[in-house]
Image 1: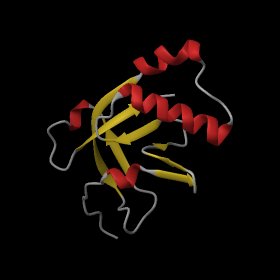
Image 2: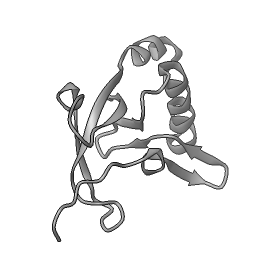
Image 3: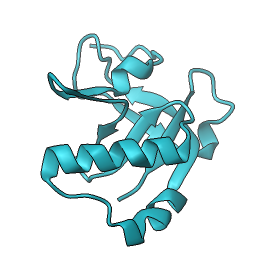
Image 4: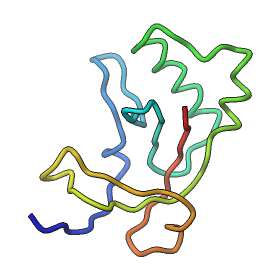
Length: 112
């Protein structure tokens, strides 16, 4: 299959955990959080807290809340391989180097 560049939308970064829990981001295999767009940091951290509580029974310790909040980064990304229509294993690169690249999209990241 030949790679054809495409731009994901916010739906591609959403996660339905169960009938009652829907999150506007996904967690990578390394535990990093990726959300489409430049999200409000406090709202995103609050949503991640809910996710952590529901999905793993853990929570961001109140003492660490400000530290996690300071780790929220607004950046840019571009799909580098795969296509969500054909391949669940699509990959993207991210960082400020993608800011003015055709096909890039806004991304909010929390490295954990």
